[in-house]
Every structure is written in structure tokens, then in C-alpha cells.
Length: 396
Image (cartoon, rainbow, N blue to C red; front, top):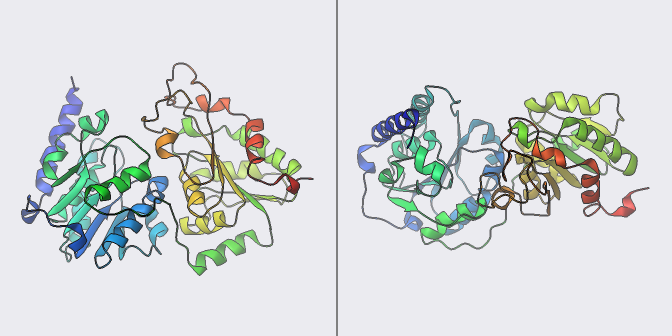
């Protein structure tokens, strides 16, 4: 039985969904998406999810070559899609933090974007490719767009979604179902369900000369570079910083021809400072100093990217740089669970290091608020994995 709080959220959400629906967005006879003039795609997720949307955008464009495609992402990801050739417009919006007024804030932000940036476009279709619980801003904005055809995954895809997105299916003309799979394939399944043909599921990223020149300036004459990404959204997904520190020392000693660059956002600046203090000039701290597109250009120049389960590894995969992912999710966890590598890990030259078993009381996914299951991965484990990516002849 849902709690009173959950029932209240469901009621408020249904009221706001009803208020979001514009008059001409009620259910109408379906028209093929390939004949659409204007398509709206809403993807309000993190960096990794955004990168895994690149095949979706490419295949959508190939099937709808004449449509104007508008993409809505979180404001911090707008830069990542600035040079995407498959969309005509990218709009960044502010998503609301978890507060007691979360739903109302989401509704007001969606209304602001719809009024100020979408009002002059009469969309034919709106697509929400997210499999898991839909963010409220996305659902409200989809309905406020006025598109007569809306496609989204069913609220019944997961138990959590059935609880927190209860009633969503009543508001979308095309409710998609399917089996759990990798997020890239979830995204593409939306298009397949609408009758589109998929040629490739490869991820990609898009750079301009300005970003490439910035990366060259940052790295200077460093010929061989290994990237370290010590950040992650949650503490349980972060490998301990002292382990990263040990790894830096081992890399400096065992890979003397390589330099190390520390990458991350402002939240990782403390880690960046700790990993570079009193160390060799071969260690460069760029945390909090680069835009996402500059980070992409930097990763393209690296021989290897080592990090936690974080968006930077997906960017590395998109530019063809091998990655070693340090994961808190144990090998005993269900591949269908949230955070499971089978659903969310990069799929291009990726080595995944996982604990064999979870530490009590966790089961599969690490439930701790701190570094916990991930502590079972050791620096020697990383060094062993590195040797499968970097030619041993590089060492001295």
C-alpha cells in the first residue's frame, strides 16, 4: 500500500499533468513520424544518458531527413549538443532540486520554457525516450508542447515508475512497452516501435575546432596521456580518493612515458588538488576548468580513461578512447537493476571492474550512503586492467 506521501505526490502529479495538456494535444488519429515537420525530443538526464542518446538522434534524423528536430536537455548539457548535426535546435532548461515543492517547480519551469521558447513552433510529435521514472519537467513539457502525437515508455515498465509516474499512460498517444535492456537499446526501441529502421547503435560525440584547439593548449606537448575521473553522482559510486592517489603514484612509476590528466566538474576540484599536490609535472589537474565539449576533446586525445561509473567514461567511449570503469555494482546483482552495468555501462572498448559479491547489507546494487562495496576494487586490479589496453612496450 503506497504511503500517504506517495499518494499525495500521485494526486498532485495528475492535477499538474491535466493542467499541462494544451487543447489540441488530445488524442488524434496517428500520423507517421516520417511525415512530421517538427519533432520535439526531451532528455533531462545526466551526461552518460545524454551520450547514450546520440544513436537515437542519428537514427531519428536518418528516418526523418526533412523534419526540424528540437532537443531539450538540462542546461549543463546544452554545450555537449552544440555541434550535433542531427538536430536543428538545442534548448537547455533548469531542472528542480528535490524539495517539498518539487512538482510545482517542475511545472513552472516547463511552463516557462513552453511559453518563452516553444510557443512559436507547432510540433507534430514529441518523444520521451527515458525508460525509468520520468522526470516531471519532461512529462509536463511534452504535454505543454501541444504536439498531437506523444510517445513515451509506459508507467508499467518498472515498479518504481508505476508508483511515481502513476497515471502518465493516460496522457500519451503512443505508450511503449518492452523488456529491460541496455539504455542505448531502450532509446532505439522507441523508434523501432514507431516503425523506423535502425542502422547502427554506435554512440558518437561532436567537436568543433575551438574545442580541439583548447584541448591542445591544455595538454601542450604531452604525447601520451591517461585520464582519471574520480567523481560520481553518489558517494557509493566513488572509488576512495586514497586509492586514486596510490594509482597515480603507480602510474608515474610504471608508465614513465605517460602523463596523467584529472578531469571532472567543480565538485571534483578538491579531489583534483589532492591528486596533484607535491607530485610530478606529469600530473595535470583540469577539474572545474573545462566545458563538456572541451572535456570531450581532451578525452579524444587520451590513450585511456579510468574512472568511476560516471558520464566522462561514456564521452570517452563516444570518441573511441578505451575506458576502465570502477563499479560499485557487484557481479551478483541483477542486470535489470538500476545502476547495473548491463544497462548503463559504455559499450566501446570498456573494461568493467566489479566486486565479486556485495558487502552486507547490500544486495547487488550498493545501497550505502558512503564508499562501501566499491572498496573491494584495489589499485593492483586497475594496473592489471591497464595492461590489457596500453601496449606493455610503453613501460620501462
